Image (cartoon, rainbow, N blue to C red; front, side, top):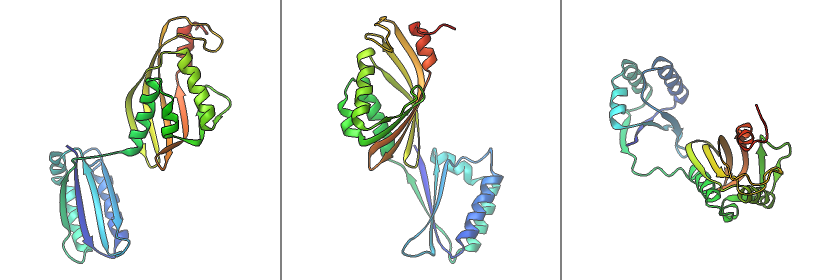
Length: 230
């Protein structure tokens, strides 16, 4: 279970706290168990500083706390604070990464042949970049036409292998498997099952997909269909 520790203190030496964190990150490389750290200053009270540190589990957090560098940095941190820091230990019982969910539900919808997911999750002014196309697709309606072409040509199926989120962008690594049942790039249906891998990165604003970058193994697909020989 993911574990988060909140460390709160009062200080006007935020820059010094950041330098301490830089030092700890440098000195614990290869041994620390923390996966994510943030430091925030209260907008209403700049002297109220909160550090948020995430760990894979409580046990990993305890292992991290036993590092000599962690103990030393903590003592230096206490010296920078007006009063002893307070700690809140949290077991995460819900972690709703909404942008990841939006990307996953969109891909799942395409796998089900449901083009209504474009209206549900894609912005009207969507901008699509595809490594296999020289010209970008602009707009939800144009993307609908493109997706319909794929669904007519293949029994589409995406398996999501992993997802990474950073700010307003979500990268999804997927495997595609589809039966070639209709015309594709001028090739009549071969009824061959083709597979390929790829990655799609979506930029999401206000819960809607605004831009996408598709990188996929087009040469592998074309070889499987007999469009190219190598």
